[in-house]
Amino acid sequence: MNIPDFTGERFVPGQGGAQIAYEHLHRYYLALRWAAGKRVLDVAAGTGYGAVLLSGVARRVWAIDIDAGSVRHAHRSCIAANLDFLQGDAACLPVRSHSIDFVVAFEVLEHVERQEALVAEMARVVMPDGVVLLSTPNKAAYSDARQYRNPFHVHEFYRDEFLALLNGHFSSIRLMEQQVRAGSLVLSRDPAGTEAEVIARPLCDSPVSDAMYLIALCSPGELKETVPDASAFLDVGDGLIREVAAEIGRLAREMKEAVEVRDRTIRSLQSEMEVEVTARDQTIRDLQSELAKEITARDQTIRDLQSEMAAEIAARDAVIKRLQADMEDEIRARDEAIRQLQGEFEERTRWALDLAGEVAARDDRLRSTNEELDRVAAHLAEIRHARLYRILCRLGMLPK
Image (cartoon, rainbow, N blue to C red; front, side, top):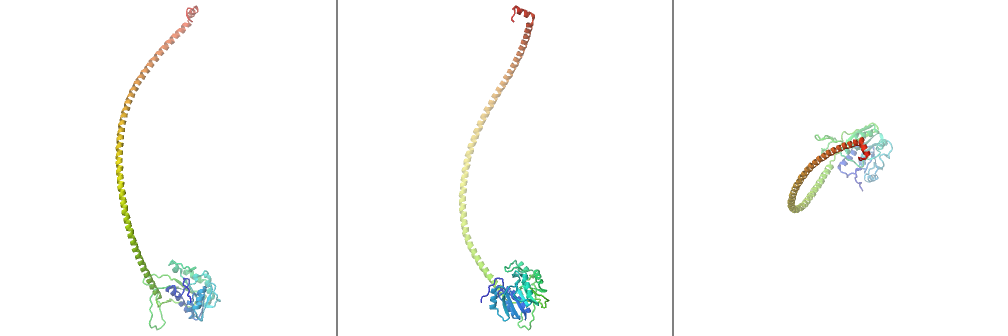
């Protein structure tokens, strides 16, 4: 008989670990108190393990699931005279209205698109005085606090959202919370009765974490059924502890193997590092040798350049001295030429002054001569205009 693989979408007994088994089985054991002698509908029954538990106390159980493979497996493995398995959609139940005394729907609401229709269908098929028990993850603790996302969940609910949805279809609601807790179990070796107690306290000042799941008992009418103040499902076989111990052992073995691998890796890296360090040291020595050669060659080049520079400086100084001597000779020659030019200039200045005097004296003589000529000309003019001069000219005794 093939058992469906656990994928995380629906619980498969024996798979997925002890914690998820506690969560799912506890819900069905809790439901037994309201299923006794009733017509029960198990919505999204999966592989049928819970429907079998319900059939042990119920008048009749109808188990519905949308997955054909799960229904076929349940038909083959979960057999009881008062148990029937049906394939169907939870949002459109193939059941007559007001024909069911008790409806259970564990961890299905968050998986379907038509969530409002699913709740409406459960309210439709249950008797007016019947009850519906359903559960869903508390988003605040299941997803937000763990920063986790279940890929099979369409929409999860916060507490207020969940109650608002149920209030739209049921008149009476009793809300409970479910969470796997650590604790201690005391069992009597010779029990005398059925009395049991649950002591729920935090350890010292340990904070109380929010419940992972919300469970609601609902009715279209008045709820006559009571809910327990506390309900504990205790695994006397310590499956979760053994599972945790096995996981710790597995982690310890993996850690030991990881440490061994790490140590081998470290040794390998150390060996490689030693080889690399040796190669690096040899490279450093080679570089130091090459650097020493380069420094020696550089120092020789510096000495050669210094020698060449000293020769060039000596030659430059000799040229400078020669040029200074030539410049001094040129300056003396220039000064002598300047003195000669100054002498010539002074002599020419004196000659020019003398010439200017002579020109002035000549000009004075010319003015005097011109003045004398002007007097003579005036006198001659007077003579020519004289009556005697005209007579003598007519007589031919004087030139005209």
